Structure formats: C-alpha cells, structure tokens
Length: 160
Image 1 (cartoon, rainbow, N blue to C red):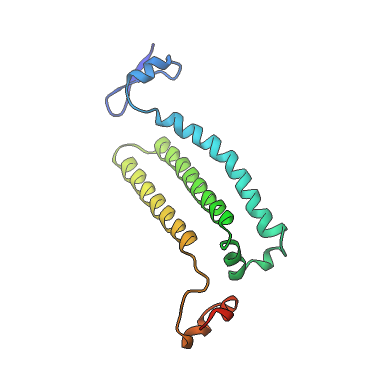
Image 2 (tube, rainbow, N blue to C red):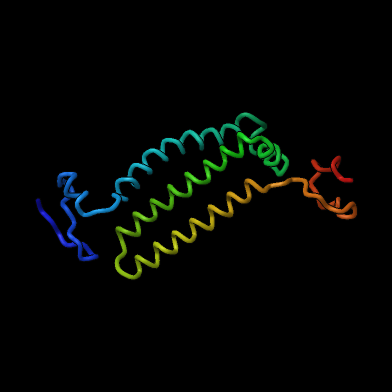
C-alpha cells in the first residue's frame, strides 16, 4: 500500500487502498459523505426545482401572476412551507458543499481555513435567515387602523 504525507503531517492512504486502511486513520470519511450528499441531494433537487417551476409558472397564470399575494397564498399551505424549506436547505448546502470542494482543490494553508470558515458562516446565516422568512412570514400583521393603508390589498377585510 502506498502512503503519502498529508498537509497535516498524517499519512494519507492511497485512493485504492483497502477500506481498513482508510478506517485505520480514524474519524469519519467526510469526503465520502459529501460525495454521497451531492448525488442524493442533486436528484431530490431536480424534483423540487421542477415542481417549484411547475407550480409557479405552468399551473397558474404564469410569471405575471407571481406577486405578494401569490407567495402569501402558497405559504398559507403547510405543504409548500415544507417544500420551500427543503428546497432552500438542500440547494444551499449542495452549493456550499460544491464551493467547499473548489476551495479545497485550489487553496492551501491559512487562506483555505479563512475561506472555509467564511463559507460556513455565510451558509449558516443564509440558512437561518431563509428559514426564519419562511416560517415567520405573516402577510397580514396586526397594525393600528391608521396604518392599514400599509398592508397589502389581501388584508383589507382583516383590519379592525
């Protein structure tokens, strides 16, 4: 078995080494799980994206019908909340994993650490903010009667 020295000073087994050699270095094989995630999430994303496009562009009146009320109506249904959350999480993590691979391929040392940390932070912030938007979206928040003109037209019958 051919072994080469890694950046961290640990021995890296050859790619065609028996599984026991890879397991001997200890820990989880993150590259394998990242590779599997990319394949599985890619297939699921194709279904989610084409479903999203169908509902938004084909099933209704096309792109001209997409407005605030359309999104409010969709997110009133728990099915679409789960659908859009899955789309957000799978797509964002899929893209971040691809960027992680590119960073690992084309950078080294301290710059790699900074780039990977920045990528992780940006991904976490976008996941949190996107999820908050989906789950806390309220098209008709309670407002005083003198500010009712600020609400969208779909909320006209809800103003007290």
